[in-house]
Image (cartoon, rainbow, N blue to C red):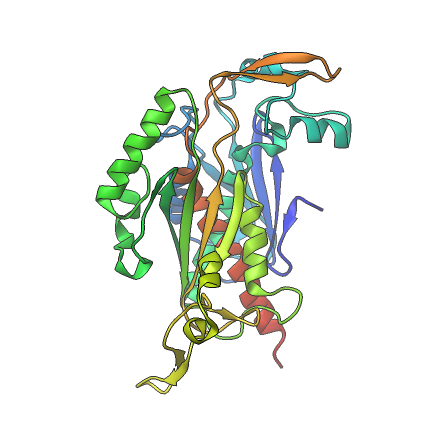
Length: 359
């Protein structure tokens, strides 16, 4: 059950990092969507490894195959099967930790929970699995576009560096013009130098991905269980290496008084009820209010570092674990399309649920 996400728009992912393939089954996608397979592939290209010196050098084409659920370019309403074949596995890179537990990895918890684990790149715990989510999320993004919604994410922090500008002052069309995926050129250059320095130190660093959802209608989300921000939070914290989630004013909001924090209502020139500020992040009472939904996700440093670390093996004996293989020095540049994909899945599900709840 932990491999399935969503209620009406549901995805189930499958496969391991070093198996023959990974993929996703989408169930609940409405019929009649003109599926742009080139746009679907574009999202995978944004996530794929080997894009620059700032990412893992594993070489995967991540070419998606649509196996079912689409006929003559349109979705049929039946399950959509998406397959991505693995091509550049180097399982021997992990033979040295077959019986050892890497610090801050899922090795120990997987071994204890199931009594057996796939040590090749972490198996299901590997971030390789997120390619399947991006493929499914690309379908959801096309649905959102049809419904007048969009999701865009960008890197706003790396280590000690943080972009202070609000998203309204950023040209988000510049996000993919640099390998860091920061829409501010000057900060992007500083972040790239920072990550490269960490890479040369054979270490890793964390960061922050920010995102904004535009065009969401009023009424998405549920008032008690299933609050929209809770669904987004669960989606984001389910991404590998995610350590924190905040929306709207977030933790900074605690420094304000209620008189400063409240979003006052007014009626605009078009007769729409709006809020003058958006500390709520587009969600009030767990339900979207028609304003932009914005949030941030914090990612920890990648756990695999190219340095010796102390650990234990399955027998509890002290061992030294040496980092090998190909890994990202900083996960956030490739996390951007993953954050977008998971947000799109949440919003597509919430939209379909809102339609189902109306007479």
